Image (cartoon, rainbow over all chains, first blue to last red; front, side, top):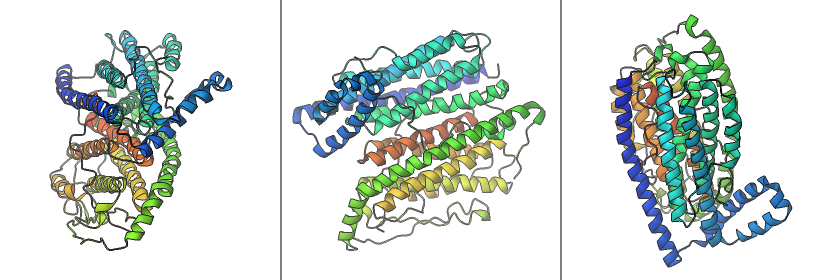
Amino acid sequence: MSVDEHALGELMEESADLQVDAMHQSTEALSEMVEVGHDRRRSGDIDPEHDMAAAARRQELMRKSLLGVGTLAAAGFGAAVLGLFDTPAFADSASDVQMLQTAASLENLAVATYQTALTLPFIGGSSANGVVKAFATTTLAQHTQHGQAFNAAAQQLGGKAQTAADPKYAAVVKAAVPTIKGPADVVGLAIKLETVAAETYVADVSAFSDLNAKKVTASIMGVEAQHVSILLAVQALLAANAPQLIALPPNLSALPGAAGSIGFPNAFYQTDMASPASEGAVS
Amino acid sequence: MRILRRNTDQIAISETELLALTADMEERHRETLPKMHAAVAEYIEGEGAAERSRVSRRGFLAGGGVVVVGGALLAACASSSTKSATATTTASGGGSNAPVDVQAGAMAASLENLAVFAYGAGISAATAGKLGTIPPAVVTFATTAKAQHQDHANAWNAIVSGAGYQKVTTTDPALTSTVQSDFAQVKDAGGLAKLALTLEDIAAATYLNAIGVLSSKQAISTAATIQPVEMQHAAILNFVLGTYPVPNAFAMTTGARPVTDYSVQKG
C-alpha cells in the first residue's frame, strides 16, 4: 500500500471539517430556496420574460427526453405534453423537479455502485490501494449528500423524493458488474457515471427556473468533475502498469509528464452525455 | 529549466500510453471549442447586439476617468522573459451601467488573465532555474492550465466585446499586488502549486457565485462549463500538494470576487 495511513487519516479529518462548512452553505441555499419558493407563490412575483426564456429551454430539454422514448412521441402523447410546457407557471415546477429527481437518481446509482465496488477485494479489501479505497469511501459519502440535497430541493418545490437509481445507467452498471476483473474496470465504470452526472448538472444549470435549485446543482457539478479528474489520473496510471504511483502524497518526480494534464482534458466542460430531464424522474 | 528526468526503465510504458491518452483528450478538447464559440456567438447576436445598440445611443456622455493602478505584473518576480506580462487595470470608468453579464464577463476575464500571467511567470521562473528541480508532471500541468485559462479569457472577452465593450487585457486589480507579493515568496514547485491553488479556488468560487447572478442562458452556460474545469485544476493541485483532492461535497463561494468589481469600458 503506497499511502501514509496516519497522514491520510489527518487529511480525511481536515476534509471533514471543510465539509461541515460546505454543508452549511448548501443548507443555507436550500433554506433560501424554501423562502424564495414561498415568496414567489405568495406574491405571484414572476418575471414573464425570464420564465418564457426558461420555459423555452425546458421545452427543449423535454423534447429531447421525449424523443428519447420515441414511442411516446410517435403516439402524439409527446406533443401533447410539450404543449403543456407552453405555460411557464407549470413548466417552472415540473421541469425543475424532474431535473432534480433525475439528478437524485444519478446520485443513488453512484452510491450503489461505490457500495458494490467497496465489497471487492481490490477496491475496499486487503489488496486495495489505500488511496483508491479512501477515494471510493469518501466519494460514496459525498454522493449520498448530493442525493439528499437534490431530493430536499425536489421536495421543497412540491415534488417527490427519488429513491431509485437512474434506469438507463442502472442497466449499464448491471451489465458491467459481472465483467469486472480488477480496479481498472471499476475505475472505468465510475468515470462513466461521474461524467454523466457532471455533464447533466452543467447542462441543467442554465435550464432551471428556480434560482436556488440552480445554485444547489452548480455547487455539485464541479465536485463530480473533480471525481472524474482523479479517476482519469488513476485510470492512466493503472493502464500504464504503475499503480505504485497512485499515492498521497505522490512521488512527483516519478510521475510521467503527461500525468500532469490527464485529469482535465477540456478547457470547457462538455454536455454531450447529459441526461434529459425526465430520465430519472419519479413517474 | 531543470526538469527531473524519470526513470525510463520504471515507467517507459506509462509515458507512451499516457501520451496517447493525452493526444486523444487534446482532440476532444478541440472538439469542444466550436461549441463554446457557437454559444458565445449566440450571445453576441442576441443580448450583445441589444447592448451594443444601447451603448451606441448613450454615446460617450457617461465616460469616466481612467485610473491606471497596475504595473508590470509579476515582473519583479519572474524572469525578463515575462515582458508581455505588463498589466494595467482600470479602477474606475464608464462601465457601471453595463449589463451584469458584461460586468461579470469582464471580472472573469481579468481573473483568467491573472491566472495566465501567474502560470506564465511560474513557467518562466522554472525555465530560468529559479524554482529548483521541477517534476515533468508539474510542467505539463502549468502549461496546460495556462492554455485553458487563456481559452476561458477569450470566451469571456468575446462576450464583453460582442456587447460593445472593450476586451479585458488586464489583470484583476484587487488581486494583482497580492499575487505579485506571494509569487515573490515562491521558491519551489510546491510554493507555485499553493499559489496556483489559491487562484483556482477563487476562480471556481467566483463562477459559482456568478451563476446565481448572470441573466442570459449563454453567459450562465459559459460559467457553468468553466467552473468545473477550475475545480479540476484545484483537485490536481491538491493531489500534487499531498492534500485530499476532493475535500468538499459541495463547492463553496468563499473567496468569490464580486461580479461587478471590475469596471468594464465601453468600446
